Amino acid sequence: MSQAANNEALEKRYLELCRDAKDNGYNINPDKNFTAGLVEGLLINAGRYGYESCPCRLSRGDKQSDLDIICPCDYRDDDLNEFGACFCGLYVSDDIALKNLPAPVVPERRPPSDERSNKSPSAVRADGLSYPVYRCKVCGYLCARNNPPEKCPICKAGKDRFEIFLR
Image (cartoon, rainbow, N blue to C red; front, side, top):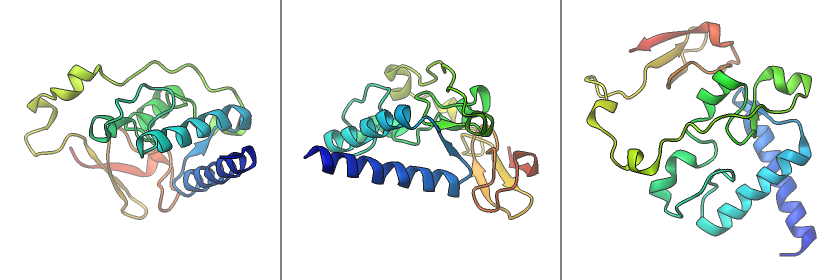
């Protein structure tokens, strides 16, 4: 691929990520040079593996084994809630985005591969759910995760407008 085509693909994917993030209540890191490197890594991994695995983690090259690190990864929301950025720094909190702050260093949350491949039955609760289900009190949006989103992807209500729907 020529440099011009590569730059065009990079810019196109960057704009798609920004639009998708905004539409769903997230922020892409405002440091465009930093973010361009991450987007380039996503595109490289998409070409290499057929899916956009996180550019900051080692992929096994097997989609089933890497489902948890396909961007946006399973760990993004917990990282954002706890640290203000995801592991690779592609997604950042409102505060970091508005103040144009650097993304903090986020420790790896992904369990080692042997723990992922041998998920214990205790990871699934008696009701069959792995996570609590949160409900937006404004529009009724439901999501199953450890914590409610910062903003509802449907109506943009803040996380304080969510309630636990199922435990």
